[in-house]
Image 1 (tube, rainbow, N blue to C red):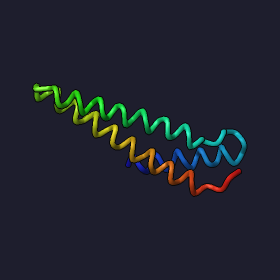
Image 2 (tube, rainbow, N blue to C red):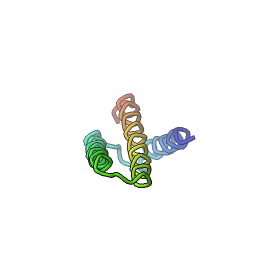
Image 3 (spheres, rainbow, N blue to C red):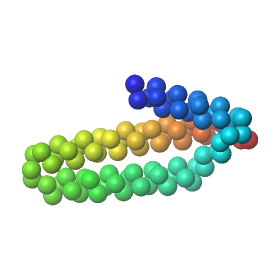
Length: 87
């Protein structure tokens, strides 16, 4: 379901890009976001190692899962952007 939303957003973006209503996403910006996500994941993993409470561990695991999903989306978007012809 989330992938369908992402694809829909990409389609809308490409439509706006074609009409000149949006600027092209720069790969450097996407790499910057990926680095932030990786740093966030590293921090969450370190916090998970230090935590002994089960409830906090489950919350941290959920957050790590969300970050992993966002990283997958960033990689997917990067692949899609590399497929796009230069404008």
